[in-house]
Image (cartoon, rainbow, N blue to C red):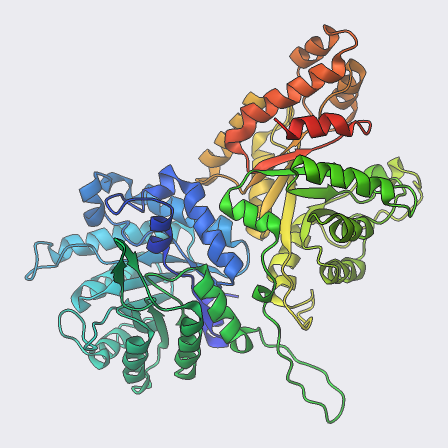
Length: 613
């Protein structure tokens, strides 16, 4: 669905204060926040993901001041196109396939003539340069926000119309007297902007929700064609203990969001001082007005009204929290037993928990061997051991009906971290005659989780009775063989990110320089770092073990130097294999969100030793 169509269909919830979030990460007032798109893309991505997890439909790019005139003070006026393009790529990757990415365009930071020194032609050119970069990078709409000069925002609108036909959200800022800094009333602003054919008119920043509600009431009374938009600050800022604070609580903000909705506002969000907690509260308050329309069947005489419980009712998983806070994740793969007795696996899980594991990975039918269902083991580990799991969820051998049924089962058991894979071919397993077909590929399942289940819908758009809160992971090979193209693997990873993947687990890595080269290639091709990576680490047990993976497991690259190292140590190959694993972790750590440790031949002691490094 396109942005303009969505506005007609429902309320769109916009994210919160980017500047506030950047400040909270220790960036100074005197730095170019827009330059962070190029120098610290992972920070901007983390902020975006926080608002996505909180339930925002719309993510604004970190481009509020990414225009030539404002960037001159930082000496970055020639980087305008790059920083705008990078911002879109970062936001798109964080947003995934669901929802929208809109290009934020703030005021120029200097007054137009005759009040200031900026010529009208120069203002037009500066806006045109920025908007052209945003449009070419693929934003869904433009948000012209925090403008106090009607003449200036009109130049921005005119500039936009020369380079694209994207929907425009035009938001002015008002003082406590309900006037702009230059004395225009809400009625004057709404009338002039409506005549320019924008999609949304309204206000942002200003003071707090109450004053903005009063401004929007005046605009709503005109019954103009554009939809209404409102993004207030979290109250009027105060200085407490030398810190700038905003007093409006998430609960208060949520109540204000409902009042705005009562006025017919369709584009609702927050500005300065608003955090993901404010967004989460607004999402819950507006949930009954934001769910996609669906036809409900009910028994005769029964009410057809079903309220969808918001996903924010469930706390983020420990894995999601760790990824958001950039805590280093340690996870270990556990294979289900060949029987229904899980006692031994539970004992192993306790050992890994005590050794410092963040979560534990539960394989499902590894190598197409008949074992206990992975979902059952994941549930038992979580309930009996008290540690969160990541359930491997292969699509091979599952019909679309079975996939969705199993997803509901997993969520009912509080198994919310899923590692989506294709799965091993049954022809190589215990039952080669078993069904090997599938109705959905991994990218499709990731998209189903992101766009449907996490919004309370099944594949066909039927209501599930509640929003799921899955955290979807995907697979990636950072070290494709020399004859294979990095472009293919990088493009596939980008596709998975766009479909909504929130983390990736790599195939076992043995070539640190090539893994670094893959990340650099990805950054160069797509303008931002990939999603959080958990690197597969497999301690080799012997030369034969290494030769097997090198020659018989597709996609794994083990260099001759590693084979040579193992051949020199005689019977101490396990020790040397652990040393190689430690060196690999150390060499990759700057790239990683964590590691995915894979035990070989049930030598769990080796894995526990790696976890203590």
